[in-house]
Length: 505
Image 1: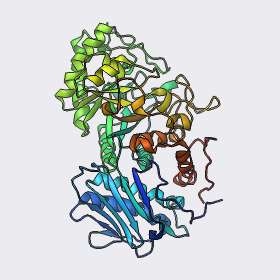
Image 2: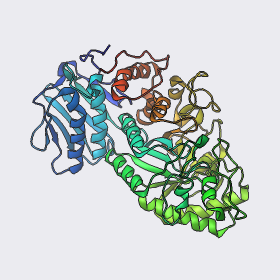
Image 3: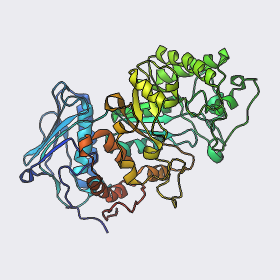
Image 4: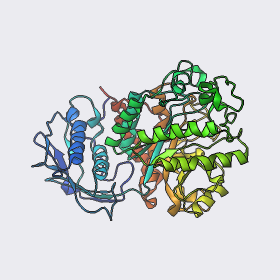
């Protein structure tokens, strides 16, 4: 049974919850057949965002919703210098006569579009014409993000996902104002990005039989990767590529035995063990290879970050690890990128520009706290709260449980500024929810492990700390069941959420 098309949302019934909400029940605006979208004069970005909004609304409403600079009841305007709300902040006014969005930068207009989308009934997500009145609740929203970095990570090394699957995933996460997509491109099982001059990386380690349990093949060509970067940028998402090292490198050594200590080829691995592989810190061939890879990945990536992994390097001695990281950090800087690494990197003295990504479950970490004290920023990804590959319950068919079981309340019930002693609010760049793919084989698997937990992490990253309230979040999340069903997004029907009924036609 489909939910009523007239089902209403309150002005603040969105995820992430906005910073400031001032409802005006007498000022609802109804989108009608004559509604048009007006965009900021002279801004190609505003025009493109207007077309994205129109494309979202046209199928279900059946309205033409023309986009232009001359007139329109829905206005997407650029003004201000961003000092107050930042580039992603926006001000949304809904009155009986129309809707006005004002932002300092196009990213703010895009964020506002995601809010408008959620304020409409779930039937707006339908692929075909729906009956009903398309009313937006009246009032004012003033909104801005708590943290600059709000990310998800998708592991395409242990199981490859296609360009179209990654794009579909990206389209789903931007609804929750996620603005970084971290792609884990290399690991022991597979190498998933084409590198000029090193063709065996993908020909061999991106070929048939690669991935956990041999469920390969697949890799991104340079053109594929560039296409993804462009697609993401159009949705104000920054791609963060990860080349994991000095551990997690078996796939590279399978392709090029000269990267091993003795020059002898290693066997491919399709199991899920970790910590057995390592680049050789004392060989110049290692750094010639890494410089080629870093140069090419940096050239393909317009975003500011390049992730070098650095985790679970048990096969690397502490001395070799330090030598290796101290050789690689300048290479990343040489090609104009800011390094991110898993928090083990903080065992080495880092430049202030380096970012440590904390992923463990321990209550303290001296290295991360020391890096923060020295000026480095931290991304919070504690595995017991944010790892989307952890099982929901003991009965979950997908996922792992080494960091514990993570239901939605657990994913929501923490605060990044309280997670580690010595790493307070001022030290945080943001939050990220990683999704490792050992047990995943399809886009539906990816979606099921992501939803409904990602919205919890997204709200923690965007909304003011004072707004965090489990009961409120649970009720707002419940409205996404019919929305996700209409979008064709698989999700885990967590029993802790009082899901709204509704299904697509």
